[in-house]
Amino acid sequence: MEELVTLDCLFIDGTKIESNANKYSFVWKKTTEKFSAKLQEQIQVYFQEEITPLLIKYAMFDKEQKRGYKQSAKNLANWHYNDKEDSYTHPDGWYYRFHHTKHQKTQTDFQQEIKVYYADEPESAPQKGAIYERTLSKLES
Image: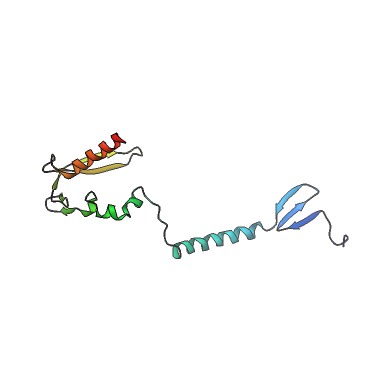
């Protein structure tokens, strides 16, 4: 058996080890490159067709899923929007009319255009009272 196989070159899992020169060379390099390219294409097709796009949660996602948030008067989705007057109506009947547009730049240089709405009677508006309640509870605790 020793006469048939020399120990100068060994083939182990596609690796050719030349013991005399301490060199390592890959025997199946072209084959594995072609296979990996085809495999990458198959993986991309599989992800595009089979797997639904993954959802990355944004900051308010968990809070928006709760029943209390969905039914809350603070949730803007529960307010009625009037296109003609460009105003919102609170579920309790308070009117908030468009006042001005505010332009803001974030730390990442993203330009934001924010519409500002003011209540017709700001002293008795329910949202103002809710803001004061939150600040008081933070100060007390």
